[in-house]
Image (cartoon, rainbow over all chains, first blue to last red):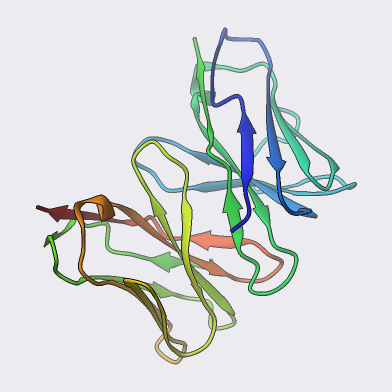
Length: 116
Length: 110
């Protein structure tokens, strides 16, 4: 399967600051990447779909002005959590999506964000 | 609302036994189905994909799909303690998005 990296793997920030998370598809060109959030003992929650060269599509209830997504190239998507608050503390995971059926998704290792 | 249902478990099996994990989905138009394994504190890892009715085998893993019954399952033969994880069923409902179940926790005891 495809290899997807994320950076950083964990980050601690103070309330009110912004944090940028990078997601890279290392061995294939991903026209579509996805950003998920996972709280402890809960399932994955899709936050947004990121398409290269266009605006991201956010899921209902996800604030697009708070979670800024940029997909500038076929191998890089970034998620910026702006004005982070303790309730934003979570495990953020990106995935790279295959462009042909059956449309597998390959996940990065995730970024654990703690906002103090 | 497109849904994917899984029993949360835990499903406990002894080492060497067959573990059977089940998943049902609500959208009849779903075309492809996936099983992911997620260890505690880690991200999901793709194990199997299936999109035709019947069985698909890969090593100790067999995925089974029955579109008429809207049912997909994963069998793990010769279960090992290292198989202990949460198994997520995911369904492609179109436009490349996946809908995930809440996962079944599998515990394999030595």
